[in-house]
Image (cartoon, rainbow, N blue to C red; front, side):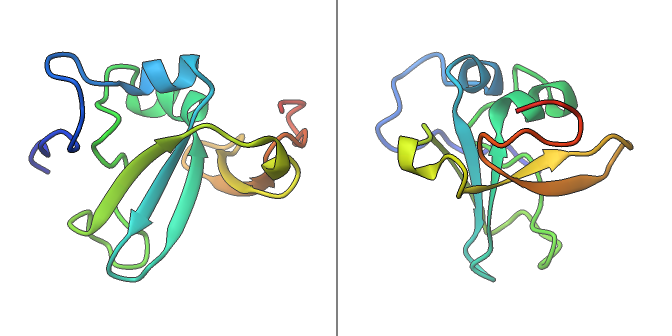
Length: 113
């Protein structure tokens, strides 16, 4: 997939990376504008899989329903206090390449939050 241009209003020069987002505790929101599916990931979960130097404005995955990354947009955001315990986050499983859904801030079976 070719590199996308930076988002409008981004500062020139150095752009945010997944490592920056993980350090700030941000959520990576992937949205497919074709099928209207939205998936939330914790940036700290994506760093070991994708890498800390991946540009945060580029999609990390293709849409699982459309099987394309052409329509996928990426957005970073900070979780709000009201979302803890309610917002569904996609987390990596114990087995490689498996994922499960968990509520934000609720400890999972691995003892992580």
